[in-house]
Amino acid sequence: MDASLQVNVNMKSSDSLRIGELAARFGLAPHVLRHWEAMGLLVPADRVNGRRRYTRDHAVRVLTILRGKSAGMSLEQIREMLDASGREGRQALLRRHHEELERRLREIAASKALIEHAMQCTAEDFTQCPNYRRVLDLEGVAGFHGAHGGGCVVETAPVPGGDGTGEASHREA
Image (cartoon, rainbow, N blue to C red; front, side, top):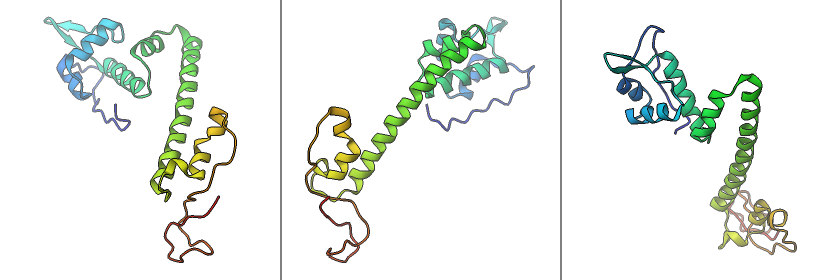
């Protein structure tokens, strides 16, 4: 689910929507809402003339489910959060999930740093670049010790003794 999800939930508290209308507001197929009802994520909507009618409260719940999914929560975790008895139980559950999100954000930042270096690296084989290996932290993760070897150090300014062009240059680390 895209983090920039824009949803039209401009509903008055007295308004109600059919299942297809509510699903369309969130870019979902109606069967998704039926599935969430079957899982206990959505309280079954009241029926008018045999058709489900959803309220603003249902729209809030759908958006909560979507945000939880985009945060990496499983439907089971979302149900636990929504059904948690009391504030303390809910906060304990969310605290655990928050810690997991923080761990994932650190991993994403480390991956981003590797990609950024590899995009700019002038070494023929970026995996041999000592700066790439420092960013990779092979010693800290896998326990490998020793010299990184020579190779590229990404630079955009001229290096003393370099070719003076201002192009990315090599120097020994």
